[in-house]
Image (cartoon, rainbow, N blue to C red; front, side, top):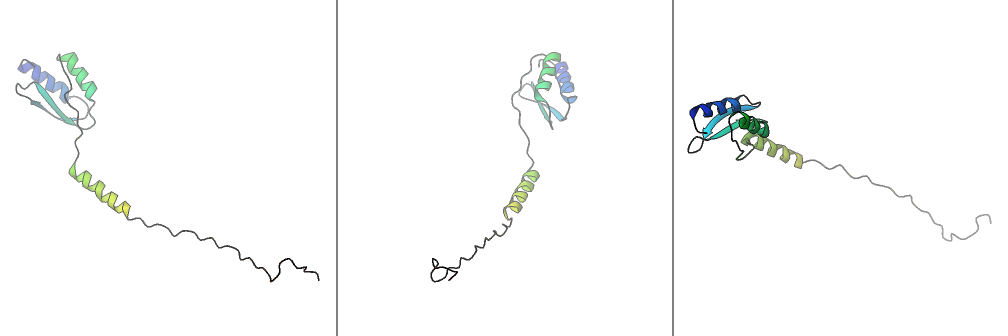
Length: 108
């Protein structure tokens, strides 16, 4: 961005995008915009900047992770590890009774 007017115009465009929480200028010549927010459509934002300001490119897209959320997930994982296993089902076999001579005649 070559002038202050272009910088402020780019900041306004980025600030009006859906999901943006903060906009800041970065870089040696203040020619980069840092946009922070939740569920920001980066492609849509870059397209609108190209239309209204001129050249725009995405340098990096990152997801911010909170330490509190990570700790909560770890606690939930630890709780899930200590689940009790149910007792297995036992199958009782039927006893087989055999006499002293199974081939003998029972009528006699």
